[in-house]
Length: 595
Image 1 (tube, helix red, strand yellow):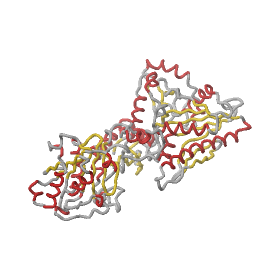
Image 2 (tube, helix red, strand yellow):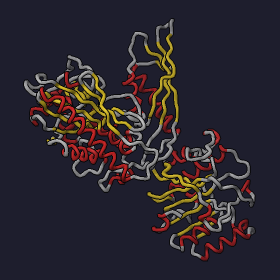
Image 3 (cartoon, helix red, strand yellow):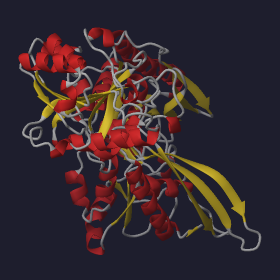
Image 4 (cartoon, helix red, strand yellow):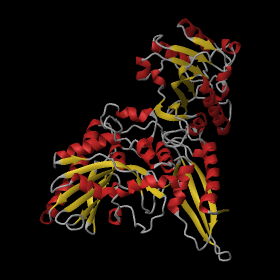
């Protein structure tokens, strides 16, 4: 029996009981601490004819437990005596349709069971489903069956809005007196060695992820003044217990041990008034353009400061603005306001926005940390080395402190920081099981920005650093609204992230279309549309085939889309609906011809 059952009082509902031996054991172990309701599919008359089962029923009733007969686990909502209260846990051990039922029937049993739990499970309740070795179809099974031959338990729970939160061995030895029966609908036992208990909890509704909601809100605003008033600037608030905020504060603290630090606040506009590639554009109505002109005067937006974004166009379309792609857009403002002298490290941070190809580690919006260190020409090498040592020390110290807290973590290589030179600039790389670029250092010689002073400019992706340090595998998790994420950091201490949605199901759909032979297909725009239409639930897009039609001059493209949510229950039907919407949107936005 787990710790929660020992420490708290729960209302427990057991369905599909065979001989009631598990219910009886659970009742004895809890010492009447919980309110237990045990049910079975068979009628009372049939159970009375089974002496072991009837003996357990009498034992349960003598301990104050409630027993019901003729209860269909797929129609719990139809049982008036069950719907008068909500249960903290619903337990279904070794569900089976009976006799030689195939995997399809047993999947349907699971799916209908999960759907029927909605009306009787408490908001924070759990559903426990014990399955024999290999039946679940998750990586936790050893050996693991082929997917098509398993019961696909996680996918069966998704339509009802449940996610798999934990998987633990089903230890029958802990339940004294428990006897598994029902092999092929007979009073015969079956093997439970290697069986697993799957724990499901409710997920949030399948809505657009917060990051994309933010982009939609900012790119649809009609008044630039509203954009500055409504934008909360991400997770970097002073009282925030979000790991991004804590990481930022920790980095500043360690930097202060090496250099004098000046921290500036992010009061820079979210909107910028010049075109670059891979940006989120905002079209303002004509009567709002005048109000934006004052904003433009405050932007010292030099093309040379877009080195981490891409080339800039010289033209500027009236009325067209974009979300800032980097705080480097405001480098002149920062240097003039903060006056970074030699040896003084100026630090700032804020949200930035860039369209990108879809992957678990490339995000359309993230928190950027900017560092500026002034130097004289004769001290450039010394100051550069000092800056590199400071960055390395800060990140590695934070990583080391987290590892020491989570000593149980295994198979984890210590994180390190390296610098790779590229011309006169440097790329910052975090090393562990694989290398990850987390930022850059740009060397601005004296005379380029100031007459006598050079500047070292550091551009760090805080989200990527947090993912590497905290072992978060998907950037979308940083933006989840599920309280189980933020609760892990409620003590204001960084620690290794514990995933609350295990082995989420994924669904694959292909799409093929023609494009004109003389047109250039924009992959980034394609990925951006796919991300928005799928509400952030596409994790991978793969080009399967490219075909040139010599007669028409058109090019045929075939892509494979992988749908998967990292924190919510995504069903096959939901993924299919997204795919159909995507087909329509691609025709409208990219003028492709579907095949």
